[in-house]
Length: 276
Image (cartoon, rainbow, N blue to C red):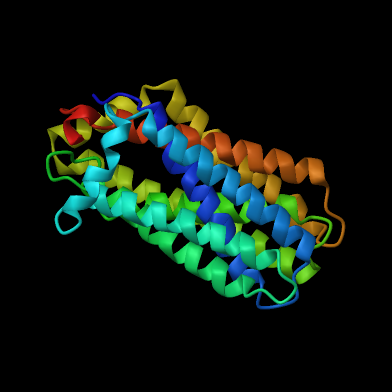
């Protein structure tokens, strides 16, 4: 059984939320988007990305030597993860400069930062696709990371922009959020069925997960509650309740944190330290 690596949980979930906000901004900016919202969402994304990078340092035995990982770009997903997240942080600075100018190229800058961050997220996920860990050695692993990005990014922007987004923009974010929740649920059902039939280690992983209270709390917060809370939003597209939006964001965030913690716990037979 693995262990919960809380610095990695914080790094991945916060980093994915940050990049998700940037990608949602880039997508919505096809139509007029309030400058105040753009600035608020950009600052929120930057703060989350900064917290994620700080959290990642607590996982390193020697943070001052992190730059050495960049010497293995050709063979190490960890090196690529570090490179792309550093580049995404630099691109975020460029985005901040663009939104501070009257005619800045904010959509281009958001797209660059979001794309670099997306490469970083995929690199993060690929670190764990290991043949010796049945619970991780699957295309489901990068999919889980990407769905967290899509869900929390969209819900964050939905909450930040409830006053200034148009009904069509709000509806687009709600449909995107609903799609992420449903995709997460169905992909996890498929993942779980694969676990129980692949090997003794996979079956042991499934047993560990289902006997953990965190698993059932995740079922409620990651899938059950978000589906229930999204229904009233679809019925009142022109009258949004910020408290309901905040509740939806918080509950979904808790579900994603629990899901990532369980992901690390599912490493049957090895410890995460073996990946360093």
